[in-house]
Image 1 (cartoon, rainbow, N blue to C red):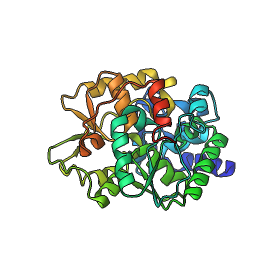
Image 2: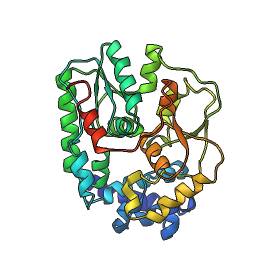
Image 3: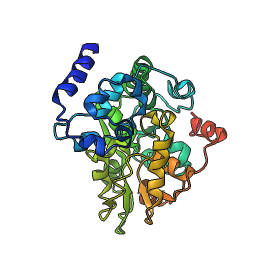
Image 4: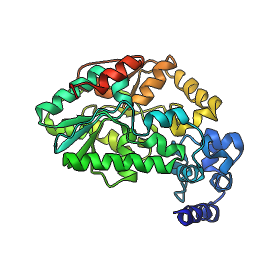
Length: 318
């Protein structure tokens, strides 16, 4: 793996066309006057990249700054986050066998508890179980590959015990982490709801903010479009909500600039990522989550509290 990482960094340096498209499209690269070939030599900036994928979108030879950043990361800091997320302290799992498993993640239940309960009931009616747990992506992005692998092993063991055939995710971070870094068979909540014939089809025009992991290929958005056929991609100059890649610790000014840019828009922000919704709400940006509208709860983000986290940990009497 170390040789593969070294080879990729060398490949970037040899392949880069020096066209500066990545620099012109990235706040982080612009700040430091770098292109991706330069970034490949700067492991001191490992945690300055928001992992939004814009550089990959614009690069004519498909170089990816996200990969460079992840290779550079050496497990530095983020102790409290890793304590909470590494074998998630508020996880709610069971050993009940289920063909499809509703994987609620860790952000959605804390932000939208009533919509979470509604989804659990929908899955119960279909004879399927649910899980409130962290996919391990934040730990992985911290650079702590050992803890991240422990999380993946824990999840795979859980799925094996439960004889799960498909994992159904409502979180784009979980969806893309499972899809890109594991062999777990994963689908989106929107595909599952479509299969079940559950959820409103909303004909209004919605202005969609795409979360970082879904920005490039928009796989989750493609499933979401069934329920919001007139949704349009918007806010293309806002590269991240500010939480991506754990970079706000080292680059708070860039994170703030993303949010300030979003505040210049007059339209109602619609997202399909609970972490984005939490971040926008915390920073005074009115927003709505697509899933709450599709399921008819129209729930807004509720402030995180320890009591609610504990309540969801034991929800369902488990």
